[in-house]
Length: 71
Image 1 (spheres, rainbow, N blue to C red):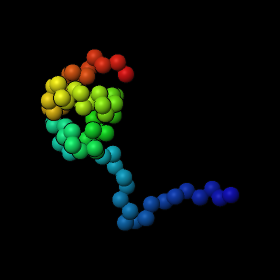
Image 2 (cartoon, one colour):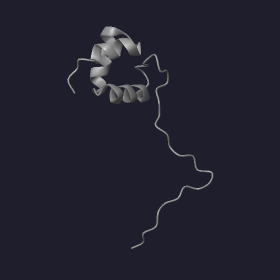
Image 3 (cartoon, one colour):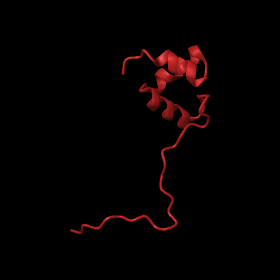
Image 4 (spheres, rainbow, N blue to C red):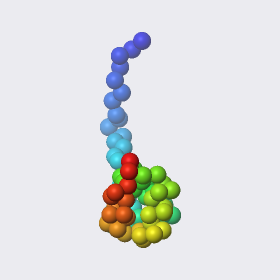
């Protein structure tokens, strides 16, 4: 057994946390946006889609709608 530590190559780019496509609008057609914002708001994708359907795609409105949501 070896105690080697993986060292990134010089040209290897570290993986950064992916952000939303737009920080102010949620695109419900982008799986990456749904995943990001569902994680951010601590809800399921289905709950996020429902909030978007009722309140629109603006992040502030969806955040406010989900603020009182039980985790």
